[in-house]
Image 1: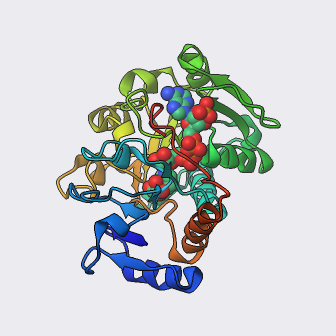
Image 2: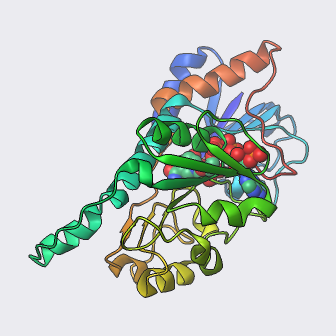
Length: 313
Ligand code: NAP
Ligand code: GLV
């Protein structure tokens, strides 16, 4: 039996699509009457404290998102039950679309021209060609490596940084803490696609912003955070965006979501805010993925995209 425990998403749409694909396999939600001992899979997003109570026969925990930070920090996460995270072409494409749109917008100075328009100001500025701009991607996993390839294909110089070294055609790869400063020093636009772990929390901070390359972008380097709010120190961002250490930022994620009305980030003219929409798991393609995970596992084929709990992603 599959239990859905989804917060802040359209759970009914997931039930309906999963039912179509799983046929006779029984699906329940939290308000149904069921014996917790019969639950073999739980499909979760933002699980409450009691989410796993009584689930003694779990074969797997399925996470609606690609990021599992909130799940691995859950106070009552059952030990030793495998966790499957979301990996999907549509999610990857949407993230690369978000990254390309924001890199291109900052490179071409579009937010600056928009502000000039509001002030009826005619000031010509000719952005350099994309091949002069170096984009640094933090995190070269499923999402980061696709974004890197796509940016390379449209003409940018691309650098990437990950824990272990990678080989991506045309992309200069830096690995580990010892190469972080080199990587930052060669990035005009920094894109964060890291998982949130104890090692990566607050990595977007003032000290690191100062290390970014001050090169071809007239306003200064740019930060794009599409991973998690916990990666960014929001006071440092505000300071850097005001004093010119950063020329601009695009933020899709925040320490507190929804971003509180009194956050000073809302009012910064060089900070583009989106409400955690870069790439969201859709029931249409997501249900195909999760039903396949269950069917394959029931047929003895094992589980895919498992989270390494020790690494935290
Ligand atoms: P992934 O495949 O697990 O890739 C993570 C990458 O980060 C890997 O390359 C990994 O290095 C690297 N990394 C991890 N810890 C590191 C460290 N301490 N130092 C350097 N590199 C490190 O994850 P993904 O599927 O690409 O997703 C990335 C994140 O995007 C998710 O965790 C989630 O938070 C976020 N996300 C946001 C949205 C949104 O709508 N805003 C949507 C989906 C996902 P190795 O390759 O060496 O292991
Ligand atoms: C969304 O934020 C995800 O982690 O998939």
